[in-house]
Image 1: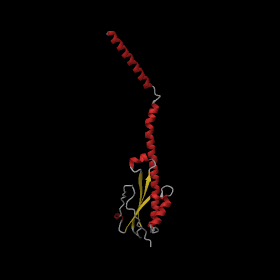
Image 2: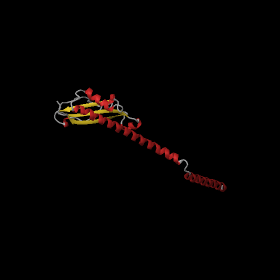
Image 3: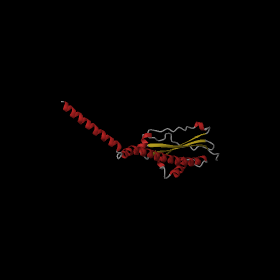
Image 4: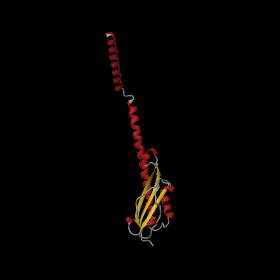
Amino acid sequence: MATIVATLAGAGLRAFVWLRSRLARARADRRGSVIVEFAVVVPVFLAFACMVVEDGLLLYAQAVLDNATRDASRLIQQGRAADAASFYEKLCADVSGVIPCADLQYRVQASETRFSSLSAAVTTDGNGDMENQAYTAGGAGQYMLVQVGYKRSLFIPWIGSIGSPLGRMLVVSTCSFQNEPYR
């Protein structure tokens, strides 16, 4: 019985020594570590790069929309946009090539007394569209609030799902001013 125990103990010792030498060699061998590090780092890097691209496109669309809103609002301020058609034409001309005109939404409000009587809150319906869309050009000397929205489809939908469950984001530009005393 003692010989059997000694044999098993010797075999166990040999197995332990063999396992320890294999582990030491595996720790020293770095051939597969690059692939593992690449597999861990690249998805995170690509996600951040995609977020930067998405934010850049969003900021570009916001800048285009801001400029178009300001230019179209100038028509109202000067009394040259008495109807919604001329206002919308100016908006479309300024955003063409970047934002589809069919996706533009607007609300133009007027007040005779003061800016505080105008509501700047943008409310949306279940589809993400602006509610209370209307056009009131106002008259000479009136206080105006112009809001133009663009429901932008996200370039990278899986990133956009973090911030917008609809896969679209409402970009809004607001301009407030007092109409000139035109006649």
